[in-house]
Image 1 (cartoon, helix red, strand yellow):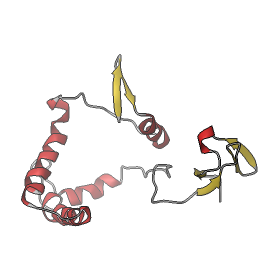
Image 2: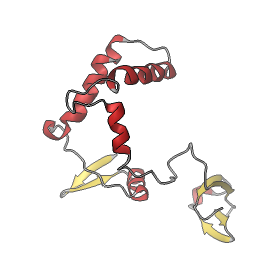
Image 3: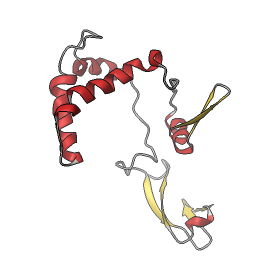
Image 4: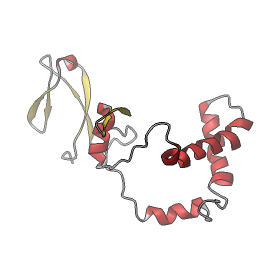
Length: 152
């Protein structure tokens, strides 16, 4: 997601930058190998690896995901956290009141609201709401998925 840093400015991949702009997100990017800024995240990863992954084998990803959900309910989110002295599963309810929902996104494939397929012409044009839009030449005669919140 992060390509490099240029004089203090973080340079993101093109797709991730689109997502950030689309969702109007503000990010704080930790410096690599900086334990003071990344310690909480690294401790969480260590906890999952040590408490869940180290004692289990899975035949499929779906089996691992199902096991992880159960473990999260029982162990990780169901017991009092030493850091907050609260149960994470209950605390998230209070935090959700302060979160805003994600906007409909071109990156969310599971939601098809506002999405339509169009076939580009041999001149790489598509029609949307009676207007013609030019696509890059590589999309000639191909089916593309469009997203607009103007389509009822």
